[in-house]
Amino acid sequence: MLRKNPQSYFDKNYTKESEEKIDIRKENIRNKIGWKSNLHGSLEIENFKSKSINLERLKLTQLKIINCSQVTEIKLSGLIKLERLVVSKCSRLTNLEIVNCTQLTEFGLSELIKLKSLFVSGCPKLTKLDISHNELNELTELDVNNLIELNCSNTSIKKLSLNQCPDIVKLNCSNNKKLINLDISNCSKLEYLDCSNSNLTSLDVSNCPNIKEIITPPKFSDKVISKKEIFKNILIIGCTGSGKSTLANVLAGDENFEESGNGVSKTETFQKINFEWKGVKYRVIDTTGFDHTRLSKNKILSRIKEGISSVPEGINQILLVVGKNFTDERRMQKR
Figure 1 (cartoon, rainbow, N blue to C red):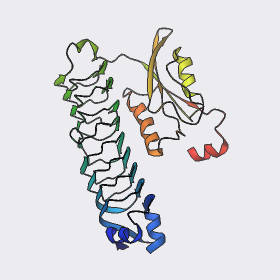
Figure 2: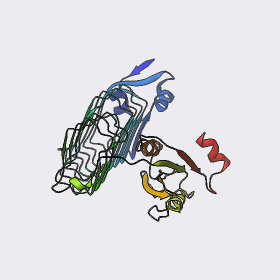
Figure 3: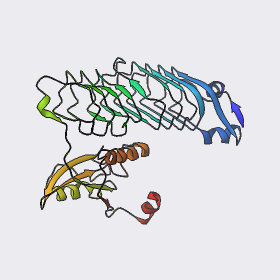
Figure 4: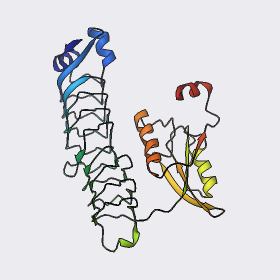
């Protein structure tokens, strides 16, 4: 295998002013410099004007993305040798996605004042994440897995899902005025939780037998759910606009779930609702549509997994809603 120096390859093929998009994949490298070639080593992307950066299946060990003032989206996937990542001073970055970087242990974020969505999946060695003092005041959406410790205090997170962090021991989400509901019922190893100085209206800590300390807002104890009721769980999956959410409403006798009619799923994460029929308690879990046009495939699959993981007691029934748009071509794609 030809080991190409990442920095020399990058400096030769990309210019700071003219690149609309930086897109480097293993396939591109092989087409340019040889079938068995790849980039091995460290890479620094600094002061570029590109609006998006996409790096896939490279052998980078260290990566720095610094002061790229125009970039709004960064996607890093399959960087299986990456150990250290720094993203800093990217003032317009709104979406950061890191997937299957299996050796990643160090992750530094700073001065990302517009970052709204952080998605980290398939990084088993990244067990601790602290984003509390990184000027991430606009961060509203955090998707992570495999963590043991998480500090996301002093952010603006609206949605926090830890269903794929069953081994988490310590969680600090204090000083967050936009986090309303927190369900950590799948975190059976959790010992410490700080959600003080927040506007939480509901906190589910059922199935958390090891919890030793909970710090909550004043007069909040009556809103803490500590014992899980027994439900029969119904999981609904299908394409965007196929009628998933409508079916969930019909089953539950409710109108909480909104159906999409324009190819963009209204269910950006999973939704749950409980109902009772003939003396039996049921729970409907409505998941993100397969073809959500605003989310990547990795995010869609992760959020469907979140819905499944949110009921650790198990799924009783799965309903696949295909709808009129589920063509033969789409059936083959799903396979």
